Image: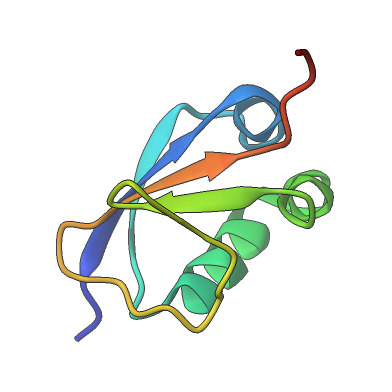
Length: 82
């Protein structure tokens, strides 16, 4: 069985998903992203193409990355500013 992970959305990703946080069950980052798109639709899918992810505090764009039980995945769109 795939592990349960917590997803936290920030900025534009939060606006596109309509939630701050949710719990999902996924074995890899790619599987998780697929679930998020299925659940929240095209608007979030567009945002996710530009996002980076923090998995337990480590930045990644590797969708093949395995997710450990209890992992926290932060969805971070690009931020403007200096």
